[in-house]
Length: 209
Ligand SMILES: [Zn+2]
Image 1 (cartoon, rainbow, N blue to C red):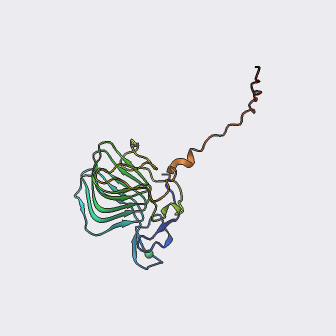
Image 2: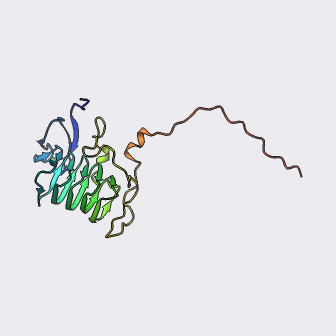
Image 3: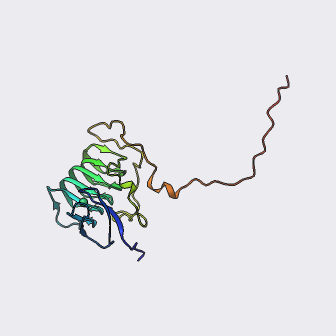
């Protein structure tokens, strides 16, 4: 069990105050607005009854929606990222990290996410995608340890990656409001600078004419 321990920094989705919580915390009281804030991951159970909500679904953690489960909500906000294999039906979805719309997943709703991966056989029924988006400025949230591994599919086939705008079927995407940021894993793929012997410079070709 190589679990990351120690507190982690979260950002309140109500007042955007940042504070540390224990890694095992499920909910806490925000020191900024003194309201109850959920920080746990929402991982729906496979093949169990649907999660139906008309209220906001908000957490500082992740939301995982497996096949045959459904989330219906006005607002879905997950600072830790979102994985959908079932049905997502929301007016607005805000993901603080990677959003995966998996194979045969159904998606309806506007999305704001720094990165999105849409599988080929995902069904996008509608929505206005703003990617990359960091309107919550979660990219500056200190991260302890690495990103969580995908729960549903270890190796998603990426068809859309950060910096690439997916094509919503209903509405065209206007100009991106934010600058595209490098892929999240870009820091691990730094260009290798090889130290080689300096190239011999050829003398400029002499004009013999
Ligand atoms: Zn707060």
